[in-house]
Length: 237
Image 1: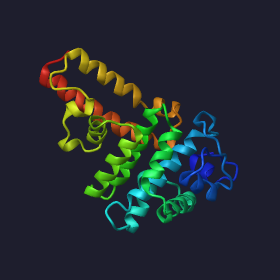
Image 2: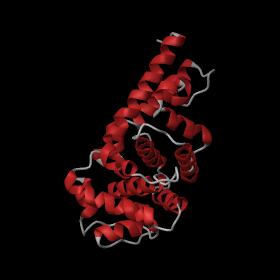
Image 3: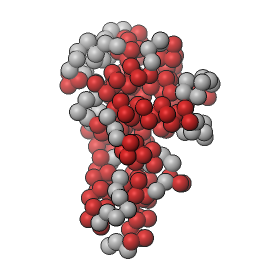
C-alpha cells in the first residue's frame, strides 16, 4: 500500500501527543502515544504528516492562504486524486489549529531526535512547497529559518540546504558546505558525504516514503552541479 493509503487507514499509528499526533488521529482513527521515536509503527507516516502539517502552517507565512498554496503539496508530490481528500483534511486541520507552527516543529524535532538527515529531508520538502508557486516570499524564508533552528540546524547549514533549491544564484561552496579556501580533499569529502546522504536509497533507508524520492533526485542534481563547477574552476582531478 502507498503512503497515501496508509495515512487514511484506521490502523495507522503515530507517536507522541500534540498537534501533529492530533492531526493524524482525526484521519487515521487512533494515535499511539509513545514518547520514544524508535517505537513508531511507520516512520514514513510521521514524515509525511510532518510535511503536510508544516506545509499548512507555512501557507500562512505570507499572511494570506490561497487555493494555490493549499494545493501545492498535492502538486509537488503527485498525490493520487483518490487520496487528495486525506491530504487536504490534514492540511486544513493544521491550518485551523490554534497551535503555532513552532509547536509543530518542536514536536517533529522530538520525533526525529538523533536523526538530522530526516529533519533535513523535511526541510527539503517544505522548500519544494514554498517555491511551487514561483515566488519565495520573505515570510516563507523567515518561517523556514525558524523551523531549521528548532530542528537544530546552524545558520550555515540552513544556507546550504536553501542553496540546493535555488541553484541559479547559488554559491557552489555554500551548496557543498565548504569554505572558499577548503582543500581539494575537503571538497571531495564533503561532496561524497552529501551524495551518500541524499542518494534515493539512503532516504528510503531512513523511512522516507518512495513517493518523496524526487527530493533526493533534485538535490543530488544541485550537489553534482556545484561539485563540477568547483572542480572545473580549481582544476581538480
